[in-house]
Length: 326
Ligand SMILES: [Zn+2]
Image 1 (cartoon, protein in one colour):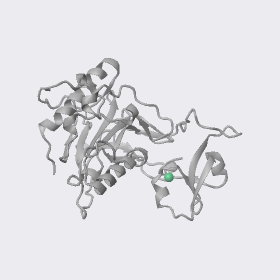
Image 2: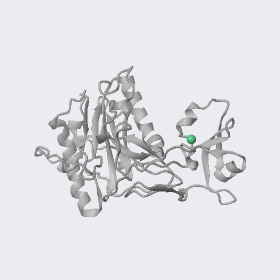
Image 3: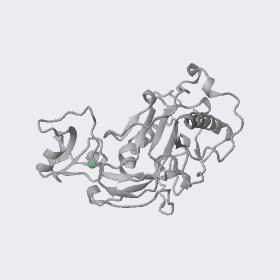
């Protein structure tokens, strides 16, 4: 299944090199795995390539400042335009997973996702509990409905490349990162590939600040190859946070607390409470963010949109969903 080749990786290394050079001068977060393998010498320098020639890439873009979490599970980067080299935009399926770095952390992973990289129709997910990603200090909280804080988060989702207990593809990620942040993008790519049979250049880069064992977030990029980005085109940063939980990213230790982040542009009601759009389950008396996966599974007769404050809903006897943590 893995038809990786040195040629296809050259672009990754060039990007990492560029990222590395720019990062070393201006900030301290590191993309692990970048020095472990020696790539072949680059034939051309993508940084100096005319952007018009390497559509969709704008090779000048590197993630230099992490976005601030303000209540949305992801932030758009570079006007949502991913950066792939021409070699990476291939109609042949392949996968590449960086070796772990000296701290045991995952690095960038990249694939050309096609039907051939996806699990077979009757294939079952394997057990991944043998893998202990860095910073794996599990905890569960009543405020999350008793659910565990962390998931072994696939960098490239199982439904895209069928990787099970691959330690190079699993990081310590909050449930929120996994479900609210990454899953919608994975689903979008999986649906697109299933429908069209096309390929999607797909890269996920975990961002570890300094020597932290838990990544601050992951950058996700996708670009559909055969239709030149018409079907799939995104470049986002998903936050490895869990609302209401404080995480020590150096170690993975967590504790209850932390203010719910407030979007500075959010509207407030007469009591000064922040107004959000929610979806109510009037049967189970739960409320969710509209993008929560539970909303899709809710029966129509129980589903009701609601705009107002969290406090008002709790006063009305509603409980926040343990998964999306509204
Ligand atoms: Zn929910």
